[in-house]
Image (cartoon, rainbow over all chains, first blue to last red; front, side, top):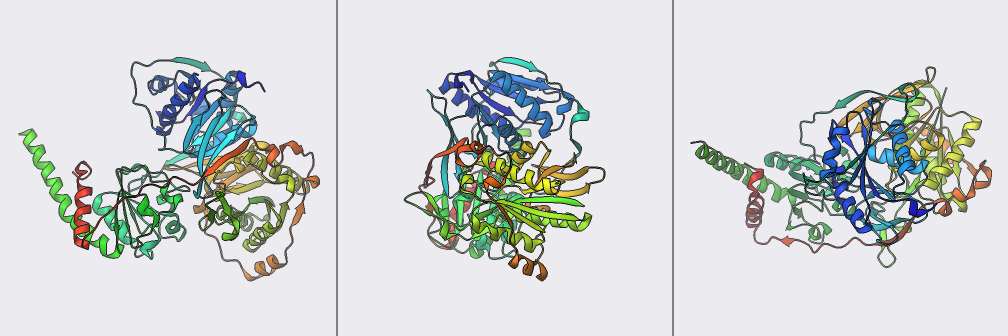
Length: 349
Length: 270
């Protein structure tokens, strides 16, 4: 393997309902920095049905080149056709690095590609860097349940690959004047040879706000004592119009569904306000919420590590503090709403 | 008769493990070794399918000799046969080398009894990657169905399975040819209590144990540390944040101060 043949940083572009997944834009931002440091191209690999029109968006967010595989066979994500297309692209154009979002389909695809090539694959990366001279990718991630950080290297194989956690990297502000080169690719695949078929896609319209999109998250931990005690978390979230989050302990105890789990083995969230109530603050939880704008911790143990990871903390019993908070927010929030309505009326008058 | 193989791993309970702050390595003695929680759901699902359609459930693990305990746990859950590959040659394997060794063992199991379905947990709690299951599927050239949270049907005669695969905002219904490989989510089932006869069987059970030499057509360069493209170059304790401001005063004062901090972001509330 001649390493000099492998050039360029690639991002696997995930598309959902005709739109680029936010994580792919974040990765273009992270990839741009790596490509600049290495003085090489940043490319997006775009696979889907009717996706060619998306390419200009990718240029605006930092891509120099977009490889496009546009065919009805790619209508829904499936491992087999997507893998065939990306392998085809890899063999033709030989990238130095490929990054994927650590999403269900990104992880699925990356695992198949790594095995087939073969090459190394680092999962759930949270910090990325590259050596300017050698092109060695430094992919760092929380390991052992988030107890430590580890930097993973792949010295003897190319391309180097990593999946990257959503909401950790930052997308660049889009630059409408940026353009790039579209390379249309094609691979011969026949539907009757595909071994899987997507029969139906069911979007579950959840009544409650999805926690990865919520502006306000009220998260509770084992300190809430029981499923009944945890109801206080729901009540505060409701008053604030926020979503409910939970630590791993709480999910494992069955107090709440695992869709609500924040942390290394759950969801990474970056809300405007994050309440951590009765949560001790194990690293495995903190890695999932540390980029929130405002973190508020309430815990009765003054030595709980959560107080290291918050902006403001109250040392006290959640069962005394939270009901007070609920009561006060119930009084104050309507006043804010009323004030805003008055302003609106004045503007229209 | 379905032959289902669940791939499992014994892991340290990372939730309670202590780290050696000087070396940044795990103090394995500080945490009990358990059956990876996701794998328990894989075995449970295999046993449920066996009960529904008839068949045999085998479990396979790679690990050091004490990992026999994890296999015994699977026998308690209702698995029929246990296989373990154990050899120093496997040590230090990353996900690529792990899927290679497990695939070689699966090929050997399949020679004795063809495999219709392989079920893995979504990921392990010590590696946290979820890459081994899809890697095995790729090596065996069978379809991987990751993130399965419901099995609708397995039809051996007609050679297909229908499952729900979890998506970020719902699920998709997928039909796949058999054989195929599932990786399963925790919400696919609730673990049943082990009936007494299973407990008794498990206590006496000894799995089939193979070394690297027992496997066929093995390329030793692809095993263990040698066969692992990724290496850990350094480990460090995550940076300690500086810590926040602890509010003081009476409870009422603390709550009032917190209220004004939160309500400052008034755009969220109006």
